[in-house]
Amino acid sequence: MESLDHLVGGLASELDVRLADVDAALAAHYPGERAGRQPVHTVYVPADRFHPGLIGDHGAAALGVVEQHEDRLLALLDGDGDLLSLVRAKLEREPVEDLRIDFEDGYGTRSDDEEDDDVRRAARDLRAALDAGTAAPFTGIRFKGFEAPTRARGVRTLTLFVAGLVEDGPLPPTFVVTLPKVTAVEQVEALVHVATRLERELGLADGALRFEIQVETPQSILGPDGSALVARMVHASAGRCTGLHYGTYDYSASCGIAAAHQSLEHPVADHAKAVMQAAAAGTGVRLSDGSTNLLPVGGPDEVEAAWANHLRLVRRSLARGYYQGWDLHPAQLPTRFAATFGFYRDGLAAAADRLRTYVERRDSGVLDEPATARALADFLLRGTDCGALSQDEVGEGTGLDPHRLAGLAHRTRGQEG
Image (tube, rainbow, N blue to C red):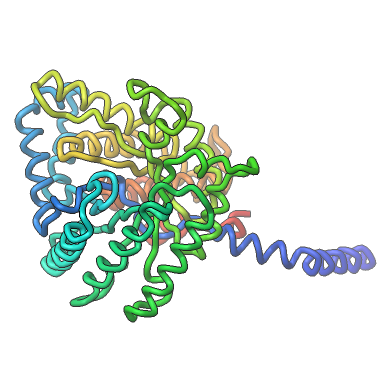
């Protein structure tokens, strides 16, 4: 037996040496899921419409629509008055979780002088909102992309905005910029270069300027060599990429889908997002679904139809592991939160019981593995982060305090075995 132990020990040591480079590469490329809260949505607002009180205005407008069409919304929620009360409280407390000040498609093409003026004003207004405590918890800008026709304008907008924002205060830790229309890995590498230069010139900490990659071109999904370029983009970001955002309409149009059939649930959308999901898995890069342009405006019937569609699409995205999406109008906020809160509340009892059974090693009809326990903990943590669930009810159901729950949710691959 002693000789076998010696053999096993020798083989293990040889494998450690043989696989050292692979182990290091795996740890570097796939560090595990990012700790901390992920917003449930990103609200896009054209830059010329942004002002320091915008978040409060969005909340008031959303509450006004709920008040005007409460009977229609309550019917769509199957009469769940408790859920509607939670939604109302969220709209009063935190109507927008992530705001993107848009200098790209939502803003359009303006003269350089006009865009410069809007950039400087928006940066001052965001600083004012941050100082007043009226900004969204997460915020950032979308600038024009790095393809040749828009490259210079995009770099100028990014530079002027960040410089203006940090002139009278620090860069918010949840600030992120969005790179649209990405068609090549080299564009991501170029943004890493720009971010590094801006940090050096503006006195920011290394790695402070982070970005999202907007996937709205087929070239992002399938490169000329047949590879999934979006995976290479993630790993070319030098750890600065925090998210992959699907662009519904640009991507669909680029694939030749007729306008009437462009949507989050078209097969080309599902294919693109499945590739994005696989590319991001284990990297710490988060996913966001896109938007629907069917807005809850007009008469009661039109509002109800748009709300029903939005509820269905948000629930569909959540079930497929897309925990974030885009909203384009204040009237979409009630159904964003209703769908999201309902998703977590409907799953609370089963998830909490399964996680408690796993932690306490009780016998049950389901044999969950460590990776599933991590998914259960992540589900409950996301529910508490957005306000759908309270820490008390999650703690009562699982027997875990918030620190232990977060530890289970963010265990790495090596800790799961």
